[in-house]
Length: 220
Image (cartoon, rainbow, N blue to C red):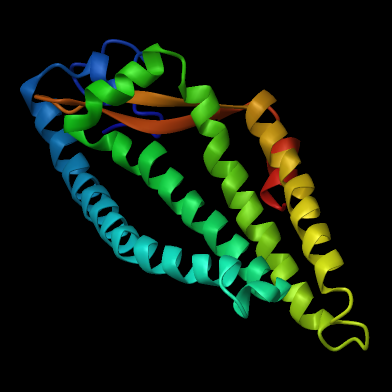
């Protein structure tokens, strides 16, 4: 009975097509139907967030030990190949951690006050830049890890490892800048408030003002 934009079109209690569902459907029957539709998605969201969080808690200590060994302990620290792999792994972990905190956990009811305060303090915009930047950095650094393996077949591979390492770091950042620019100027993230009868929760949403920019940066 509800349109794709969350507006009730056929409900007998419908008050206007331009008003959101949470402000239109005040009758008990409508609220019950909304709760039935929302419950499976809410359970899935909670299970997914908890599962990801547990996996991160288990992964971060082990990964931190391995990456520290690759970066600082000889003979591993002498290899720029290992260093590049470690950098890619660290950036990927930071992306996963940022995604969990900024996006996934915002729908938890007991954290409603925290994320509402973040929105009131206008911190959503700077926070929204972190996740796409780390994601793009992770993808680009993974590309250079693959290119470095291909480079191993060249006759001058060992002598150029250090040069390639710094080139990889610099270009990974440069290639991530369009994504950062897109989320700075053309994409606005916000926390959308949803009323589920007895409770109110926030969910991340975004508005894109330039589709060409979005398509371009999604390929980066």
